[in-house]
Length: 306
Image (cartoon, rainbow, N blue to C red):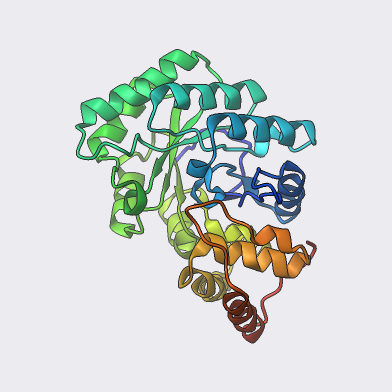
């Protein structure tokens, strides 16, 4: 499969958003985390689900993006989340990403209204694309039906690619349904469509099937091991590497993921403020953090370089 040319790497992280003592997004801590991820071979899917993006206003997201660019983070390694229930909010976020030079946007479907027809979802994306009006726009569809409850049918994906072949260029599939992921890869084979799995648990299968990588929550805490598998997926030890990723994923996946990852970053960085989340999420208690640290220690897990 010939894929669309892109500077984006095989692995991206929906970067967790730190909050300062007042509850505002802390862009200095965020920039530091982004640099660490970059140093470990991981791109920046800022404002994703695990970034608490839907707890941030449009203004907060655009300001944070501007601050990251000003801090020297490369827009060519960024795929900001640009979806919103309001199409005008989605347009504003998309324009900001394009203006900043980001390599793509990760766009949720409008998720408040359920059971909308494909015609409505097509119109939503068409409105964003036409209003943005830029040949530089590269949209990655964000399929996460366990959370959004609104997904992408194969006919809808094919219709979007046919109408906007240079703009609708890929997908992050967080369905957790391998049969669906594989069906999209197969249906879009030859179009250049870039498939990212929504978890590193599916990374090896996705690469072997013709996908390009993964955009995964736990790339926030285990970036090097995940990016190393993406770089060496054809090596003889690829299955063993995958098993190692699954073990780490399991530690976090059985807990509230965002709070767990932030607790891990707080522990390994020695910066307790990292544990803060924005309501309605709830930060880990001391006991929950201690249990997490004990389990991380039991499997020899470390986050070096923070």
